[in-house]
Length: 155
Image (cartoon, rainbow, N blue to C red; front, side, top):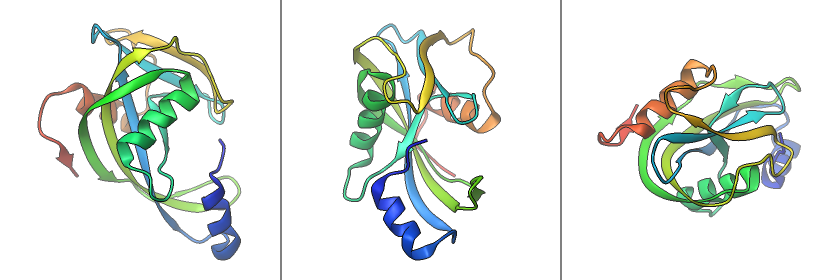
């Protein structure tokens, strides 16, 4: 996965120490609302909604829209913020430690056919909501809250 330049600059100063980063998840529905956009990550082969790191000074919804375009070649617009959640700390294979504040949004497709646009993913495709590939529990949870119409969850 591509590491943003600002994270590389921070890593030069803090080495592998824990970094607190803000991230986004974009759950993109097609115009009918019957299909969801998923990407297959190139690092571990898992299917997920589009995710990414917010750049310094970038608005979260704009970051999510940028990530959808960069990763899947799709233009989408945000409909609602579904969940705000601090994720558990994680350690990458190189020893870097990070913890993310994830902001999960529901988006609506505007244009574009999905494809793996930037090399971070090997596939990008629409899936019927009743025929999803295997998702890990965290990603399934993000999808579930974005598909619902309840209030934004702060957990």
